[in-house]
Image (cartoon, rainbow, N blue to C red; front, side, top):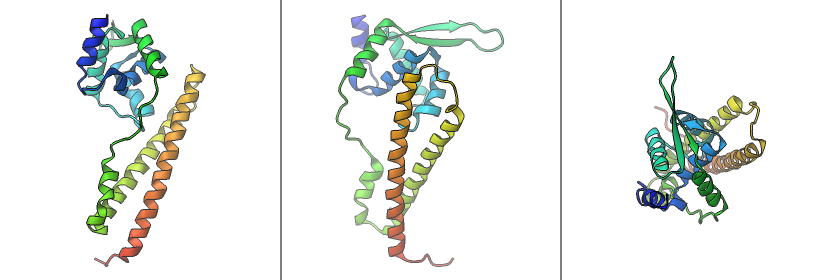
Length: 205
């Protein structure tokens, strides 16, 4: 098992150490909550996780394959008569131990890469019109993310929680992310208003 785990670490397609590969731990956490198929995991990402961590189909299925090879999850094919068979994944004891270890680790310094902010930093070297394009695009992105969170709240917020303690912290994450998005939207709106005022009225076409 140790050799499998070491191979899993070395074979990580992102070149990250296991302790820094957050996507894998997100998926271990999802499978700790309940066994899931790859489709179930993708649906969960879309409705609950996409606002702070996104993953495409290829990433999800590659990660599942690597987790299975490392012995952190098991896979079972569920035979169905009226629809295609389903492959359902569940955590192994080794996977539970790995997830528990990660949850107890300290969180690395949160210096993130943000191309929007990096580009905005240098917008003083171009025109206000260029900066406005970036700011308006960013505003649309923030509004889209907030709308997605509101949709998820409407669709899933009224469902009975099978694990209330888990739900408590999931809602805390959602509350935190929503506050960050709203704060970013406020700063962005203020910047747009300030630059539009400096530029003056747009000439009539």
